Image (cartoon, rainbow, N blue to C red):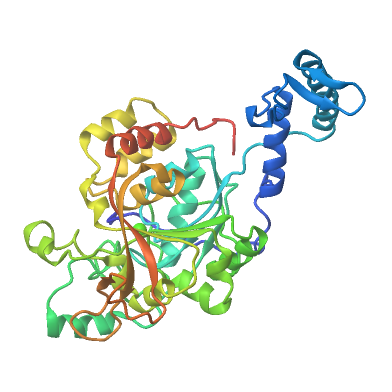
Length: 436
Ligand SMILES: [Ca+2]
């Protein structure tokens, strides 16, 4: 979620569909990684002490011709063998370059909105991460204007090598009209994203989904790929089976469409990490913030969330209200501004003092060790069109209805200091002046 409100927009138009991201090669397989480990161990002479031959009880190993062999001779035999193996492996290593560790492959789906997208910095600022693409979904704004926003920010960051693909314009079932009807019955919703009331400067335009108001950082020159986000997501998990983390920080429409188009999609991904799943936050809407304690990403498209949470992922991680506790502050801005790049300037100029919802979620995808506490529970979303439409619910083993809902890792605490330190570092990555 983000609340940038008065950015100007520019139409993103079509480009060829889904060329493979530049500079990307498949990571080594498990088997090749094991081979690499073995080569390194042997080349370093680090023989496992458990490999020591079993003692015969007489100071050596029985030789079929000469009786006992001394440990000194045995040692010489081992040295000779190791030398031969070392020569062989050295030649093998020369013949085949040692691959670098497999990158952390991520597709980031979000309702990018506004002239800065600081939430992508934990990904593009971390050299261990390879972003296969950014996919865009309507949520805080409409998909067309959001696509222009993320394209422009990638230009500022000099990372136009990363593809951007536009996704769903509308949620699966929910609509502005349904939301108005819900509010007449059950109360008010503070933040309605693309359905916020129309603003004179067109920062909100609920009845004009394809309008792109001008942006203070100008329109992008680059274009999104043609095709849809769902097709891009499907293509990438087939290209890199069980290697791609699907990271989302917007409504789950694109992910649900991918699941419905390709029943293999969820199981072919490495995992899902999503921003959302606020559990038991009703009281916080009274005691803290009626806005921040609302599960916007789930509420905006409950049916999509239901489809996603009942799909066969290898692992699901929910980053929910835990991210409310970490906000963008003047102190954080000052730390980021200590190094001047086009990215730090844009972040400091346009970031709003809001919780770092998406930034925390992206950072966890880049570095899961930031999580210091979690709870596991079955999770799904209410899709009845009543008071609790779009409300997340969790169950323990004993009471889960088992209608397809999956066990979810719900993050309840992170290492905040380490997150903030990493976020400042990632925001300050060098932006080459000579790269287009
Ligand atoms: Ca978001």
